[in-house]
Image (cartoon, rainbow, N blue to C red; front, side, top):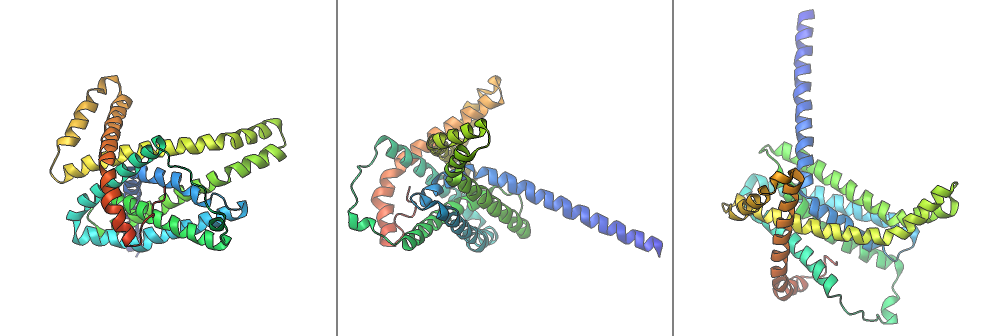
Length: 320
């Protein structure tokens, strides 16, 4: 009886070890897959704060929470099942969809740079257009943010799916769930801190118990505009770098290894200077490729795709 119990305990322990290894593997691959989506994640964090601009401080966190809930719905209820169906029945479509996501990131990055270099004219808004019910305006902003999040979440989930090294559907589901929830928490937790940072800094500056605390609060208030600009610059660079890398990787997955091979060969020439120099060379090359692709796509999007989206009622979804 004792030996049978010990054998049972051994079996349970073995199963527990396998389960723990599987969980570690899922988490490890989810982390790796989430890292591949860095460009879209930074873009999401950089874009979202503008949706709460102009609202009363008391409404900022509730608006961020509404958008976060919409983001979870996008990723878990819509995109995760779609990704699993894609993996099960049309795995051949992952590389083309990945390439489309890469093109999108390249276009977004190039468009941002274009707008920085050629800022649009500031047309005065008629007074009648400014008088809008606050609750209705909040609802519009939240819907627009969730629509934008859907596009970015689709990129993130596709990139994550392509990075997973498994054909087990439960493994893919668990990893994508972890990626979706973790990225949502990271993005919207960061957004909440960003939109409340000036209020926190102001409170510290006015009510801080020490001179150092009050000085730190004043520094936060003064530094936030520059921080937001820096975040946009970093987000744009990340979009171009990741977008270019995704395109070359997707092309290699479809059988054309030339672009990826050229980038790796040039970057490897810097290996003598250290691993960081090699990585930086590759990132710069991919970023330059992303900028070139995005610039080439801008006329196509403006003259063909944008009119089609407006006709379908989807125009202005991005709203950068």
